[in-house]
Image 1 (spheres, rainbow, N blue to C red):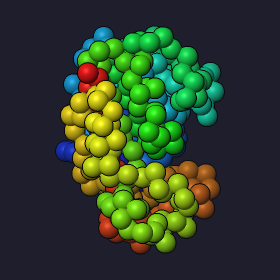
Image 2: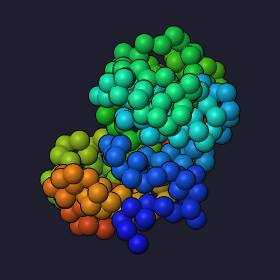
Image 3: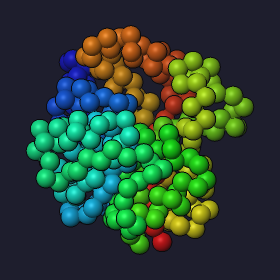
Image 4: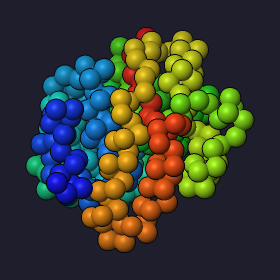
Length: 254
């Protein structure tokens, strides 16, 4: 079995396993986005015809998955990836008629109020969503009863409780690890606003193992992959699942 073959796991991720792992690794911007999204969507209840904002959509893998697997119409918004590059991915994947690419910064979204039935963010929310004021800003773009779903890197204990960022994580991530919060932190952060009812707040099953499998494949199959991904591999190997995880969080706008 090759490292790419290890990314095909129909027993655990039947939807994701229908996608070419080489295609997915070619769109890499972080841990396997389809595994994260498939786990997240199990708590969400997406229905065909919904209008979904994929916030921090990267190179487009999650937007393709949303359109294909759940029959939703997607607006793919990202600040770092030019819209024309993402649109080319959507056209090649055959979902160009259901996914629209927009270049947008998360604090200046160019949408009307109550434009979306759901907002989904996979491995991006940690960069912009931890501020106390961000959820109230984002919620204005959801219709009443709209769904909100986030998959974001987590630690198993808060940095504040640990008293420090674990050294093997700090060497690779630096201070940004203070934004890697537990499910309990996120539940409180959202519920205290009174704007949403949190429906699930949990760790992704096998999060550390999934991250390790993905990074090994990227290191082996990307140009200069060993150099680019080597530090993350060292971090994950040293961690051995003690601290590193992903939070899966869903809620419904009141």
